[in-house]
Length: 157
Length: 275
Ligand SMILES: Cc1cc2nc3c(=O)[nH]c(=O)nc-3n(C[C@H](O)[C@H](O)[C@H](O)COP(=O)(O)OP(=O)(O)OC[C@H]3O[C@@H](n4cnc5c(N)ncnc54)[C@H](O)[C@@H]3O)c2cc1C
Ligand code: FES
Ligand code: FES
Image (cartoon, protein in one colour):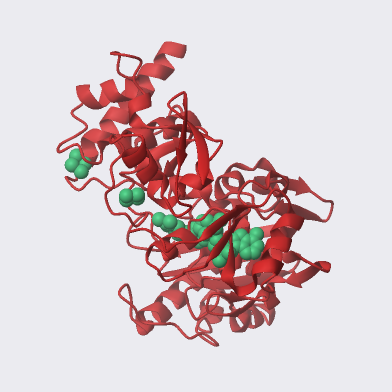
């Protein structure tokens, strides 16, 4: 079937089987390999992207379900060479070790701050419950998200 | 993991969805948020040959004040329930429990209708609608009919919905709530409940329902009877396992589940204000 998805601001069309998962469409058809597959069972969040602005697990969606919708992947966050504030905060706070969970963590974190711009540490931990870090580097991940929140709420004051 | 092949139809109206179900019969399955169905299809535990996607039926995505009840469209997502000010005021048990389903990514996609129709005894929201005495509205080729929550669950992953029916609306009675509680016991944050309890005390009666204590979501009728006849939270919770058939699995033995049910029912009754 023919689908058209706006991915990182660009309309992308493809001819997919109905059973094609969104993550496979992104990675294999569009070459956007920043979105990782971890568990492939909806548990780890490595495949987190935004669908119409909200975090979603792309291993648990059909590409067909995204037809006509807007998708943002980790590749779509930076503005040219300028990292998205969340990416920069992860870099500055050493919010990653092997980096495998990082694209999903960053996407989940951006969605979290959209919904709750000034979360407590507990709210960040609960808000990232859908993302697992196999390196268990949660401490600095939470620190990165809190730093990003402080920066943006500080800036808007 | 990739599902077995199927034909994909996107329904643009309730009528179109029902027509597709009627045409394809047992071969067809509705797809709402996909967060129960797609994982099963990826494991090939479900292999429908036609998927009827109702995920775009935005006219079934609403939370409305309907006088004596709140009317919720079946395609309303968990996140919508979680942040609804109407529910926070009139049905706080439902919005609170919806905020504990899975994780944010799941709540962004999963729907109330899908969660109820899937009829998984481990799901949170079926227990909530049982405790609150909700009414479900099903729409089929012959129009709509109402089903009481207490009559909805008929077996493991089975509901009173006919194969050509769509769950379209959930009606939550507006209760004069004196107290409520949702107890969910799990080991990892995003997990399903090992055992859960939903309680609401309102209009002089108490509704208590159990998650994961049998092959269907269950009303804790014996507990409710005990409370009605004046038992304390401690005494009523001793009846938590009557009529249950807890399973043993990788997370817990049936004995442990029975223990949890007693403890959580007691906590739930106490938290909802029963001495
Ligand atoms: C990682 C993860 C964690 C989860 N954790 C929890 C949890 O803690 N607690 C919990 O309760 N749930 C949990 N869930 C399940 C989640 O709540 C699902 O979203 C929900 O159970 C199903 O809703 P859906 O819209 O995704 O339905 P789908 O998966 O699309 O459909 C489920 C079933 O219902 C049928 N159906 C869907 N809509 C209708 C309708 N309107 N009328 C008739 N039939 C319909 C479908 O045909 C299918 O058989 C979790 C899911 C995942 C992936
Ligand atoms: S790969 Fe999608 S949740 Fe793990
Ligand atoms: S940094 Fe290695 S999985 Fe998280």
